[in-house]
Structure formats: structure tokens, C-alpha cells
Length: 170
Image (cartoon, rainbow, N blue to C red; front, side, top):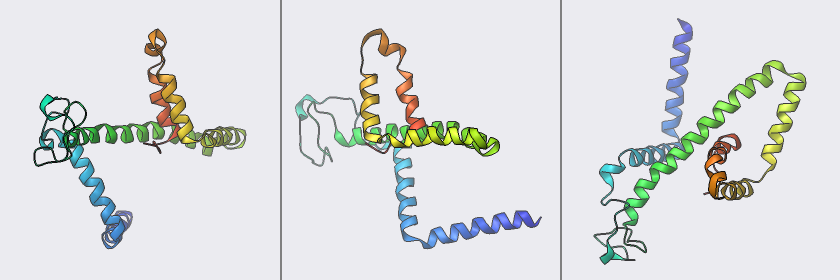
């Protein structure tokens, strides 16, 4: 019974510390707003993000188009709102893939120790030594090849994101 009280007490203490920390609260509010924006995109977006208005090419921000329109008359605000879904999904998927690979390897490394630990650490050091931007450019180029090769290898650049960690470049 005392374990339950201790866990509940530590969670309450964590919540109290978060509520007192201004930076933590700002981050929590921004993350919550971003997630809500992505979830409620169909309700919040004023226009269809793919709809083209040929009479509104490259319009500046106005009361009709808050962020203006792009080169083919699409509302930029709607595209930003709908784009938040893709950004959020990319972040969630990359973290889930990293966890699915990293947690079992960490458990194996910690449990087995010795040579297994050393080999896994050298592999990890090698992955961390590759600059994220260079890796992103290489993966984009690898996925840009055409023909049958592109269809056969579409999955591996996307799966590598999870192995190399969450995207650090935009």
C-alpha cells in the first residue's frame, strides 16, 4: 500500500513542479495547442488545402486569406494547418521506431554486457558520428531514384529515420 502512496505522491510533486515552472508551462501549452491544431485540422482550416483559386494567385495576407495564397492560388493558412498533421505524424512515427529498435537493443546490451555491449556501443557511436543533415540529404537522394528501383526501396529511407533518431533538420 505504501508503494501506491509513494507513486501518487511523486506524480503530484512532479505536477506541482511543472505548474511552477514558466518555461515548462509554455512548452506544455504550445505542444497541446499544436496537437489540437493537428487533430482539428478539418474543422479549423478555412479552405481546402488543395483547392486552387485562379483568381487569387499570390495574394498578400488579407481578411479572406490570413497568410495569403501561393503561386497557384491555394490558401497558405489551410496548408499550414493541414501540414501540422504530417509534421506531428513524422515526429511520432520516428520516436516510435527509435523506441522499437532502441529499447530492445538497450535491454540486450545491459543484460548481456561484455562483447555484446561493446559491439552495440561501437555501432551506436558510428550512427551518431554521421551528421544529421548529410544523412537527410543522402536519404532524400536515395529515395529520389526512378523506375522499378524506387518502388522496390521506398520503405528503407523512411525506416532509417527511426533508427537515426527524431528529425533534427526541417
